Amino acid sequence: MNSVNNWCVMLCSLIVASAAFEFLIPPGKISKSINIVLGSLIILLVMTPFTSKNKIKKIDFEKLEEKNISKKLESVSNAADEQTMDIAKKNIEALIKGVLKDNNVDFKKIEIFMDRNQDNCILMIKCKIYIPEDEQGSMEKIIKEVESKLKIKTQVVLQQ
Image 1 (cartoon, one colour):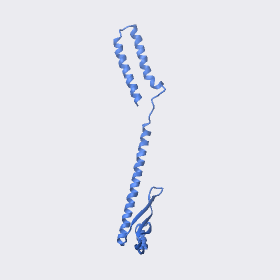
Image 2 (cartoon, one colour):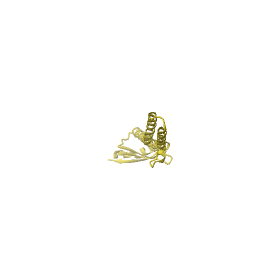
Image 3 (spheres, one colour):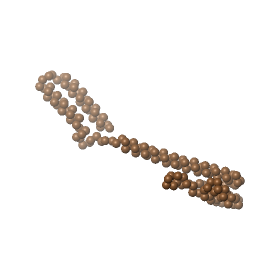
Image 4 (cartoon, helix red, strand yellow):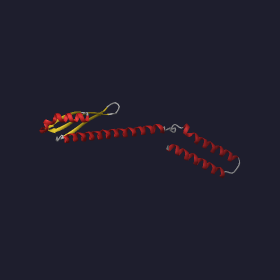
């Protein structure tokens, strides 16, 4: 773009200088010769972008914009997908905590494992609930409650 700008400035400068020089030359045979020379210089300057080895490059702004827009859309989409997964995990974890609280069961940690299918829909794979060893008697009850309410595969792990 800089080369186009420079070319335009040179062309305008040459036209203005030619016009000024034309007024300074006395009329006669010499003025005709100088007019031909100045006119030839202007024509040569107009033709330089088309004849030079470093031609002005054409920039396809539509493709450039499409690439930038598609990259931005992809990054926004990925960020939205991650946020959706995080929110879903937190909500499921809160529901599991509610079920455990309703059954008066202490827990140490809850892990939610989720994935996406080819349609980019969230799939629940399973959840792991870590409980203290002294809660061993409530393992089956926890599994049944969580699986019946949330419809996800549940695994209870005893932890010291």
